[in-house]
Image (cartoon, rainbow, N blue to C red; front, side, top):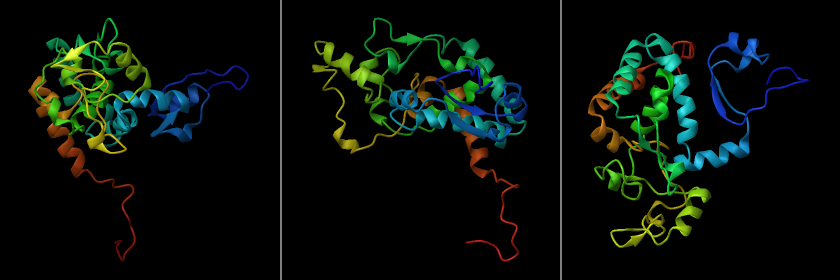
Length: 233
C-alpha cells in the first residue's frame, strides 16, 4: 500500500477499521471494516499453526469487536479485562505452537499486546470448542496439551525429534489425525489453544468472554436489516 512509486510491502493479514488511517497511508478508504491478506502464500503458511481458519477468525474478531460491542473498540469491559489478565502474569510466558520442538517453545502471549489483540486472541480460543482430549492436560508440556500439528515446518521438527516420547509414543505418532477426516477444527497458536483450556486456565477471563459472546450472538445489524414491507424468508 502507499505511494505507487515507493509502496510499503508487508506480508501479514489485517483488519481495516477506519477510512482515515487508510487515506493517511495512501490506501483506499473503501477497505474500511474489511480484512486484507497482503501475501496469500504467507497467509496459507501461517494459518496452519491455527489448524485452518483460526487466523482469519482472529481478524474477523477485530471487526466484530468494532461493530457489535457497546463502545466498539473502546469497550470498557474488554479494556479492563485485558488489564487484569496482563497483570495476572498468566500470559507472560505461554506455549506457542509454531515454536513446537524448538529449544524455546514459550513466548509472551500475543493477547497482551493491547486490548484489541486481547479480544481477538482470546475469542479464537473461546470459539475453539474442540480437541477435548487436551483439556486439563497442563500448561507447560506441548506434547500433552497441544492439538494436532499440520504445519510442515513443525511436522519436520517432529520427524527430526522422533526420539522424544510422551507416555511411550513418539511425537510423530502422538496425535491420530485420521479421526478428523480431511479437515481439522481450528485452535489458537498461543496457549490456551482451546475453549476447554481457557476455562481451566483463566476462569475469570472465560466468564467475561462468555458474556461478551452471548451479547454478540444476540446482536442484530440494524443497518443491514431487510426493509421490505413483505418480509424475507
